[in-house]
Image (tube, rainbow, N blue to C red):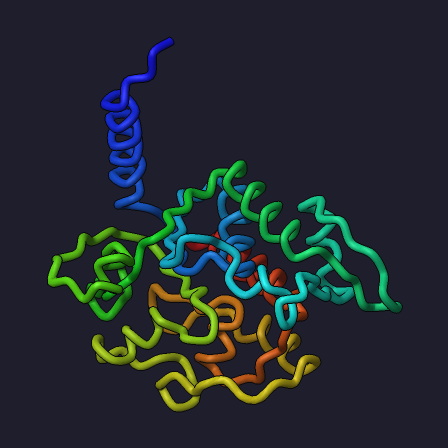
Length: 257
């Protein structure tokens, strides 16, 4: 068979266009394809919700890829071991309560299982604004990451979502946009983002699950973003809390969207 370059181009453009158009009106839109965001998408898709995920970078995985100081091993504690089992991620016991997994296997397996469950991921897309209707976050304003990086004056597009999940990690990008532009008071003690504290793995892992919840009408925080929004320490290369946070938010939204 002779390959035709134009047919290849047409196939990519037509297919991507169809995927993007279908993603413009969904039950849940997740921003950030770290472990918390992808796990959240996995469980929402399993619950038969129409869910899409937008990631600004070329690759998914967030901070999980690099393990600790670029040693591609991660630690997961007892509470989250069942999630590793569900995804089929191999792990081994270091000491009682400390389980080691290969970070590359973890990222690729979570991503694959999430997509096969029905999650649709769009990479290289940045959120530059949110859509607000009647004091509720109602969707996202999207542009190509390349446009953002080049500081080009190119207008974005808008998509609608029943609920938006901010899983952008330390920067809490979506929540900070809402705080800065919408006038909506957040459900924190101050009504504003509180910022994350210094590293304390034990406390941070407990708090991150507690804080993964509704930030304001139509917007949830999930994963490390939650501690940046509600105030809590960072944890380092232990990832059980991230997995549990994604599952918790998905369970809450499964009955609401």
